[in-house]
Length: 163
Image 1 (cartoon, rainbow, N blue to C red):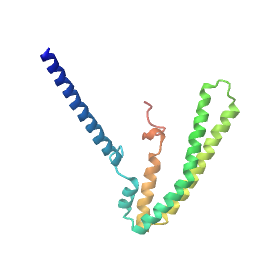
Image 2 (image 1 turned 135 degrees about the horizontal axis):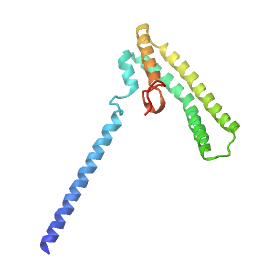
Image 3 (image 1 turned 90 degrees about the vertical axis):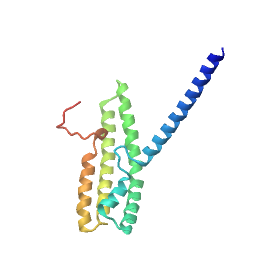
Image 4 (image 1 turned 180 degrees about the vertical axis):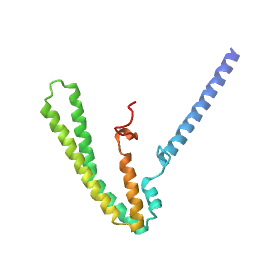
């Protein structure tokens, strides 16, 4: 009887230690993910500051322009998300009319077009902050960023093989 109690006590202590180790491991991993992006890069703005060798004045102005930009586009992004949600909810409705689908589809396109126009103006305003050598680097960064924007974050185009 004493031997089974001793084994049970040892098992409980081992499980307790294993749980504590697991909690520490999870908490340590969570803190690392908060400071780094999934691809191992830090804050994109800080990368841009470093790459373009921005002055303090340029950083301050860029952040102000960026804040104004997000005030404009966040509601539009929310509208796109809500409209797409409503649009794709019609999948389960076999009686939905083509006109209704066309309306929602056009509304999504119009919202996205507004976002793209605002983004273009934003990029132009930011570009005007920089000197000629910085503008060339900024132009390259914008082109790379635009090329990366695609469905699901995968780098594929229409010529890529489907999975």
